[in-house]
Image (cartoon, rainbow, N blue to C red; front, side):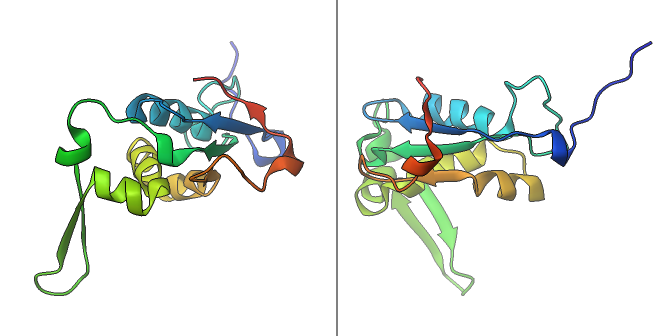
Length: 143
């Protein structure tokens, strides 16, 4: 009888992937990015170990949202002070900080634990087509 293999830090090899999100739907892109960050497509995948790869996202300002989400979808956060609930629509957040729209979508698809914060640190998002990670030679991930 074979035993289940558990991934160790020494066994993990990390790759870099480049994702161009120009005119791609936010939710569909976010699911694929979350799967790569978790390492779900690798045969060595272990839920309790971060086996994922690095992901570089470019053209975040050109992401597409379906339906009327630009006006209706709202993001909330609280300042910590009484009456400090702040709300911003997806359209305004896309104009102000387009990287945050993708980051929030991917963060919601990762597990809610310390491991997810480590996975999210491997996500690099840029509003335009340029990125400073050319030295890592990222492979193009077609979504």
